[in-house]
Image (cartoon, rainbow, N blue to C red; front, side, top):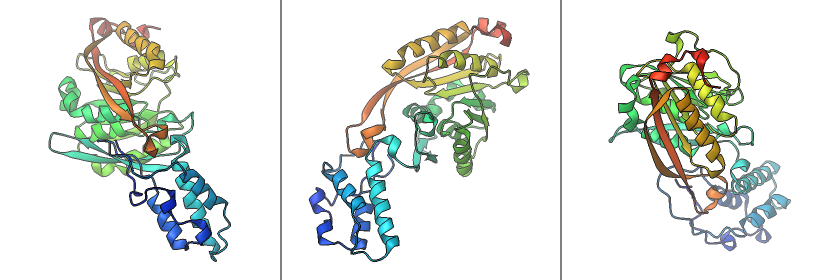
Length: 339
């Protein structure tokens, strides 16, 4: 993954228009435009910019604090202040970055791919579903190789994504396979999720989609009839609290068909802080009657906090697995789920 930079002609702040020289509005706006940090493009890591940003925050702050009195039009001064503020926020960590659009190129085969453009609103601590996380990207890229483990992808089944976030995985599935994908998340996340799914309608050429709210903490039988249940349950990076393993497995137990061809696919980062939750998830999946068919570790690079500013990218280990019902799970009814 790489952040695309447009400041390569500059080597340091000293190469930028200095306020004491009263630079023109055009010069300032052009410079601020070239300093823009574009959304990260996932893939190979680009070479770091040669521009020394050590004094850039001070430079941008001086523009914001200046009256720019030599520029006559107030509307132009406002544009300059706004651009300088944006450049400063782009370098203040992921949570300070305003809403943005990012395009992910997802392979659909060895020779073709599909571009999926997603809106990511500004982040706060309570809406982390507004970011496209590494596990979602890796799982979306892995879909073609997972198809042999997922019979429903070949025969046209029903798929539900739990904690769909920005929608990357669900949209990718519907773009590749003749299945219906129901993307779900919490009420606060759904409006942006629905907008992203709608915006990518032209890329969804194989399957179909729907979007809905689903709170794992609320125990309700949303699939009381077997024909309402799903052939495949998908979740990427679903563990963020000690309650999540129990809630997630209970939700899977409610929505997954009791069928030998039914599958669960989960990918998550191996964060040390969440090791107990990962262990509990595996134990609860087994206790619910689900057998692991295949699992594997992989690595990628997360674009979080300082990664937009030319700092070294953070390598993150991830783990994915596919489950199916074992004899115990097929024998259980939905009311027999393990607490």
